[in-house]
Image (cartoon, rainbow, N blue to C red; front, top):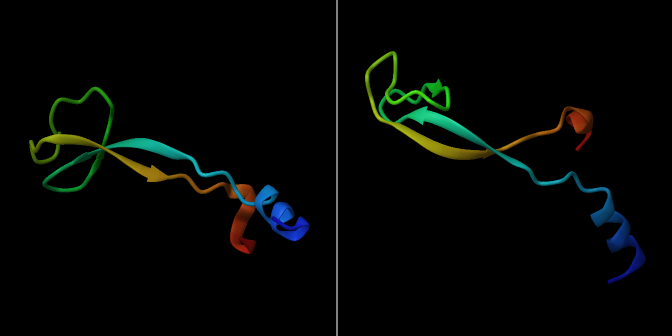
Length: 60
């Protein structure tokens, strides 16, 4: 691995994911402890989605 490749890897944004709870029927985002969707009564499932950092902004 060359010097430029190492520098490029150092300046890459970190990959971070967060847990999101969504309804399987209407896709609305819910709280962690809700047993069912408050809007349609559908089943709640946990999903992960990537987190984009604000400080990287549109330049990345």
